[in-house]
Image 1 (cartoon, one colour):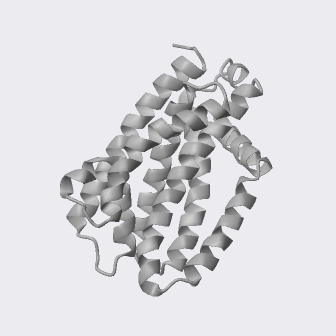
Image 2 (cartoon, rainbow, N blue to C red):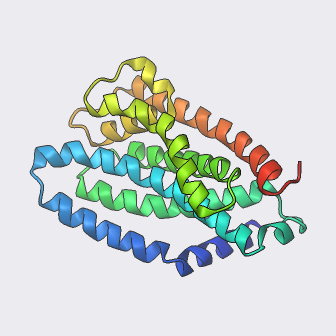
Length: 229
């Protein structure tokens, strides 16, 4: 069942042009970053890497969910033995695989040597934002409603990151998922190694929020998107 769902998601994403779009994105990143001075590139790469899996996960899963609902796929699907958890897992795996391919390319461009930290942060960030996208889209019927509503969801998530971009990052901010995510990406590309304690706190914070988002996504998708419970 899981393999069938995953294969269907990969085919759908291919037909919708996700892979072609992200190939173009990678080329664009390479051209832009290659033209920048080293110092500016080191500052910019973590921000690009942070935003990529977040935007991909949050907005793409919303579009896919609305597409499946609009085509009448969801209700018949869940009459079968397919469970909501399996559907969510398939979306998380397929979109995270796409995000990781782009992050890996950016890791090469940014010349990181901390691949474990980079890919762990990317995977957790992507899964967390896929789940948040499912939560957000469950209350909307059309893509226009979702795009407008997504701004309300994204603002409290992203706003705390802005002081970190300016260089102000007290330790308590790492309890917020987007701040923990950005800190991990900054650590993956920093010249000095990220303290292991800070890395552990960020990973645990992001993992905890991802677990919370999973429970929330299952409940809201079931209740508001499917009307099951």
